[in-house]
Amino acid sequence: MSSPFFTLRTLGALSLRRIDTGADELLNQRMRLALLAFVAAAPDGAVPRERVTSLFWPEADQLHARNSLNQLLYGIRRSLADDSVIDVSGALHVNSAVIVSDVQQFRAALAASDLAVAVGCYRGPFLDGVYLRDAPDFEQWSENTRRALSADYSSALERLITSALDRRDSIAAVQHARSLEAADRLGTRGAILMIRALASSGDVAGAIRHGHLYATLLRAELDVGLPREVDDELQTLRQQSSKPRPASPTHDVAERASAKPGDPIIETATPQLASSTTPPAFSRRTLSLQRLLLTIAGVAVPLLSLGTLIRRGQPRASQPAGRLIQLTIGRTAETDPVISPDGKWIAYAASRFGDARVGTNALRIFVRQVSGGRAVPITTDSTTDQRMPAWSPDGSRLAFRSPAGIFVVGALGGTPELLVAESGRRIQLGSWSHDGKRIAFADTLGVWIR
Image 1 (tube, one colour):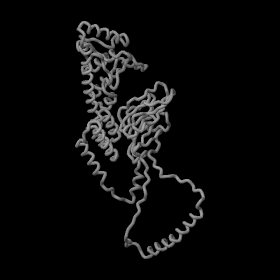
Image 2 (cartoon, one colour):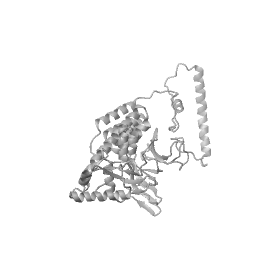
Image 3 (spheres, one colour):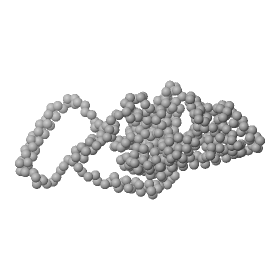
Image 4 (cartoon, one colour):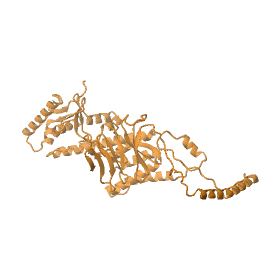
């Protein structure tokens, strides 16, 4: 069997492309694309002609509807291939030898229990933003199919998250949980799995923070409180995080020795031991030595103060403020770091493991807590560079630039929203307005606000 010539995308958008050149076909022919999508999405791969005419031309009589369908099929076959859409016993089929569709691939992967491939095929809601004039039945069919496919996608993600948690793969669990929340921002199940995934990675504080963000979202969108099951998850995490950590004089050394490359190196002060009583092990000689040291200190302090007075007025050497905290070891190309408004998170662009040069591979935007934890990509697309992350004033969203333009995505990850298309204008991302309603950017034509 020969390879197909075209790919039909129906999940996240509607388009038809040549596999060899990547060129769009039928770009301005929405009716032709919609017909291909309708036939390709049929569960059994076949649609009776009568079903097509009733959805696409509900107001026309049978004769005119059949003529309209024949003209539509003729246009498709003439543009693509004579056998692109075939008729078998009065039922229409999309010829898989000519056209391969993402919805068919998605369903085939689910049937084979290949969940990773299935979620990779799902790049957004079915026929998102596609409408046909004077075809209400087609709109209803689209909505029903969209809902069913979304439910299948969410179910696959839930199974992947559960599997990742069972094998303690916290990175995969967090990534799949982000995808699940992007598909259903208000879903309780997605919020619980995200909290569990973050906690499993050791980021308990981030898990609790995520619960607070979810509660805020519910109040803003639905004016409801936090579901009991989510609150129970948070209460359990708070109890675990409030347990006192056993003190150990070798704890800091052991923690550094066990640190993995890329883990944060946080400088901590050495605990000072104090006691109101002298331990029995101390001898009189030890006490005498202590008194001698105190006497020396009593003489040294005035001398130091005198030296300070003598040097007063002389310029001091500049001293660095604060202390350095290394968050990553630089095993990849890492650039464009920016701290969130609350100072608890950092976003940056990084390449895949092993590449230490910017431009060697596509960069992705990662987020991680300043206090520790693993870095997690906020999007699943790694085919193009993502640069210049910018936090919204409330810390709930991130804008970034890619060769396709400027995008905005939730700070917890999800499906990016295109704000400004590139169009060859060399767009440079600026900053958000204080109210989070505008983004400034520049290109070869000037300075703009979106």
